[in-house]
Image (cartoon, rainbow, N blue to C red; front, side, top):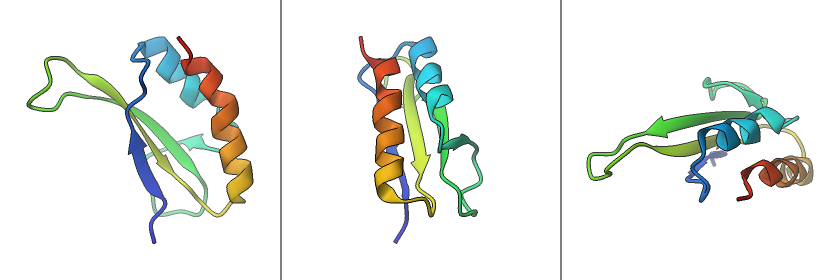
Length: 82
């Protein structure tokens, strides 16, 4: 079963979304989902039915313990608070 998921942050501020990704310590920036390490990539996406681009954050969960990944995401979420 795959460990790749995406979410659209409620806060769509460019700097805050980038700060979220940068503040992750276990998840590293990357787009190759074929490895064993956890990765993150923030992407501004413009779907056909959207008026403007929106930030989407893609997470690939690797082989690190789930509890450590959860803690890493939780600590980084403070950068997305409004």
